[in-house]
Amino acid sequence: MIFFILKKLMLFFIILYVPKSFADSICLNHINVKLHSEIKNTFKNDDDKLGYALGVSLGNYINQSFEKQKKIGVNLDKDSLVKGVQDAISGNLKLPQQEIAGILIKLEEKLKSATKIQLEKNAKENFIQGELYMKNFSHHKGVKKTSSGLLYLIEKLGEGESLKDNTKITVHYKGTLINGVEFDNSYKRGEPVSLMLKDVILGWQEGLKYIKKGGKIKLVIPPHLGYGENAIINIPGNSTLIFDIELLDVINSES
Image (cartoon, rainbow, N blue to C red):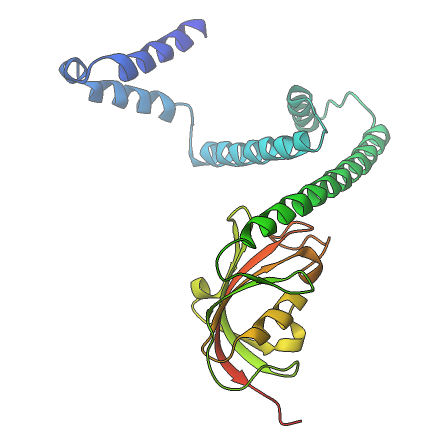
């Protein structure tokens, strides 16, 4: 085994550190073929490869889970986990099933508690960072702030009728977080969105009334005018939201 590892390290050293001209002269193709042959001989058939591929997939998932749990203060021992998998497969368990079930219930409770604490911590930090972002953005030329705390920058006013709560709007938009992460984009989906103004978040309901059909506006929306402390898909709790919106069409109800 030691000889095998040393041989691999030697080959790795040759590939990385030998000058290309010299490497060409000793024919690296021969080394690559030999390595491929050794890897190929590890598997007897396609079923072996399938089992290995599933094992790698499981291992990657476990690694990702470990990293996520570590971030919320829950540290698990990988060696013990691997040993548990081996014992489960061999049927040679070191703990009774009832005790294992109890341990897993406690782990689930611990993870829920740790996740809740981390989400609350993140929400507080998001709020602080959002306040700082809005303070800086408010100093940009043309930016206006409303009594509700909404910031907006009209890029194109548009023309036609003013929007009302029962107005049907058709828009193209891009939504990002203050760190630049994009969470939604109708342009990338390839089609605009039509909906009633009264059905959108408060920041949109207020901000879109400052433009008309054909207009464009940038909205910086504080959490209380967006999704508040609630975390939804791709949007953490207490997030300040940035929207670039193009108002394509406006249909005001007759009633």
